[in-house]
Length: 324
Image 1: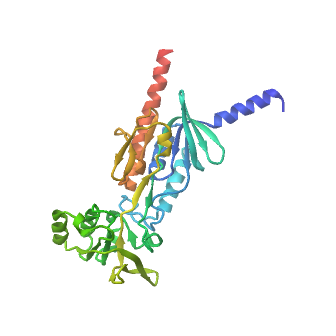
Image 2: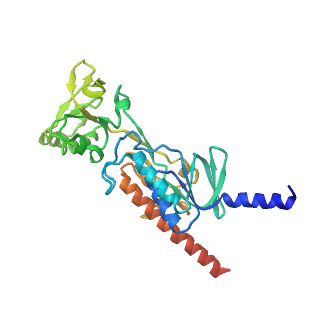
Image 3: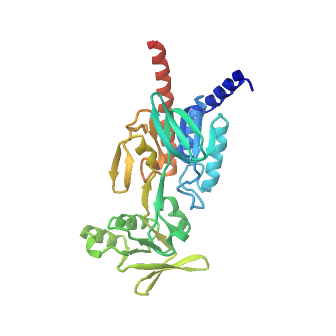
């Protein structure tokens, strides 16, 4: 190969690794952003590690026109849609990112390095479940966390709610909208930690409060049958709601120096209404900005971030031309 051909080959390879936008995360937020960016004719790369938060759930509810769809099918539809507009999807994990003058350098686990003028961080979060035998194995089936996601499907069944702190009272009260048979297991929370207002509300909602540590779940014929306490007593329940500890995946934002806001549910980036972080050129969307973002919120956030990026890059290009 002559030197001219080598130089041209290197240039073509470098061009392939330059993007207008890199979207980190291929869930609802990332795919929604990529769809808008692709339709706006921006060269876009989605890097997806394939770890969606709702993977344990058999179905996804509450998304207009897609109510009841399996989460994997929803994402497959999104991936097919973005491919129509030339968006590249890469199955990989971002291990490092850095700001270098007018672009970002993004390093992937497989060894690839790409450049982007703007970033969308849609890395979501991880749910850490209570360390009670049986909870992790049945999570997303008959061990649930969100009544808006699953309440209709288990309505009127005997519910249990496993307390992780005194704030779990709110969850016990909320699920009473879907069943009038609710037992609140205090587990390692002392009854004295509940306020008088908490106790009055629980009584008004008809929620039974059971003190004592939960030892394990009772499963029969691959279905939740009850909750066993440390004293050996068993309370028959067919559904258990738990409150996982959300762990935001913010390592990339931290590397870039983004300002984070400490909340009772983890540290999340400070963002404006479009998802723009404190780092110029970096947007965040979905569970990367808050633990309570549902799929519909995540998709909306991805759309808002992408629309803002389209305008931002356009104005940057025009202002650069004017000032030359």
